[in-house]
Image: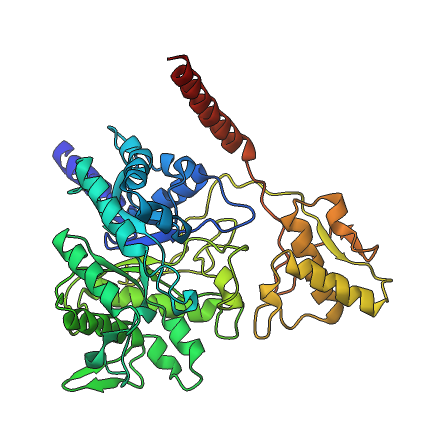
Amino acid sequence: MAGVMAVLWAGALILVATSVKVVADNIGVNWGTMTSHPLHPRIVVQLLKDNGFEKVKLFDSDPWMVGYLAGTGIEVMLGIPNDQLEFLSQDYGNAKDWVKENCTSHLRKGGVNIKYVGVGNEPFLTSYKGRFLKTTFPALKNIQKALNEAGLGNKIKAVVPQNADVYESKSDKPSDGVFRRDVKAVMAQIARFLKENGAPFVVNIYPFISLTMNSKFPSDFAFFDGGHPIQDDNVQYNNVFEANFDTLIYALKDLGTPNLTILVGEVGWPTDGHKKANKNSAKKFYDGLFKVLASKKGTPLRPGEMDVYLFGLFDEDTKSIEPGNFERHWGIFDFDGKPKFTMDISGKGGDKHLVAAKGVKYLPKQWCVLESYASNQDLIGQQTGWACARSDCTALQDGASCSNLDPDRTVSYAFNSYYQMNNQDEDACDFEGLATVVSKDPSTMSCRFNTQIKVDGATRLSFAQGAVAAISSLLTLFFLL
């Protein structure tokens, strides 16, 4: 009987262990921080662990954030912003210092599992008009050289996350894929360098962008429904994600590097800010994507498992909206760490909510709204525009979740957005006497009026003060010597 019980107990343990593992090893997530009220890194790292994410991609190397990943085993891609590329390309010593400060310092026993350093972020976007063409490759070389000299070259690889707009196909068939003429020469250098150093090519693929940039683009081809396929000789493509991926392979083949490992650095679907950006469409896209990833069938040109990083973890209310209002709504979690919809990340059936962030604290349940007696329409319009220019009104745009509010509630949404972004400061709900604070939630079925989270700045401040004190002590010692 004891033996039977032992077997049953072991089986129960195995069942628990397998049920906890929700996210496959080949799926990571992007952790962006362009938000007015970021969640504490301790909370975010716990959220990653609770949901089984074992890979995370960052957009900088903030030691405060990175430090909380120590001891977790989570594989990390650090990021170097584009505005640092010139500095790192000019002097190899700058790259050595960067590696020492941002990589070596974390690689103690029980430290951070750094796997990649992303040198720049989509530096060759057409909208940058060649601004980073001359600095990206030299910066990449310097960082990898510094990693090699530090004895980290076999463990950490320098890469350049690229947007899929660096390559194209005039016929829309993958087999005609080539790199853009203005970047082809530097892409050839980068591709060869990545091959020589055993590093992958990182590409960001956005079917949503393909859909919204072309009014004639077939909607179902952006998902995984199999409609409107592309026939490329004897190969049929049923969705733009796989077609885009193979277009890159043909472009790399054109450069003489067809066998480079490819990581999808960003892929996702926004949930607001555009008529085609909503939770239903996002869920539909992710359901299809996860099934494709779980099948491990790959693409026609690259069969097998695909490695991807979902974009992104949270909504970011201070991101640039130059590409579109949807830019602030890519998160699979809301700004406060609540899951937006059920997901089947396993791709094998089993739709469920992700685990929400724990320990999140909110500001009081109060909102800033338009006074009922306000009637000066010119002043109301002026103050609404002023509020939106200094907060986030992307949900009010045509087709977005709050676009159907009545005029008064639309104004209230703008006022409240500014009020919450400014930590419910009393002066942030005045608007020339047009606004008042209420305790009754003005949200509707489709439009949420947020109350903002409390930001724990004390820990960050003490960390920064400690760092400054340490540097000050070192400088004092240096001058004494």
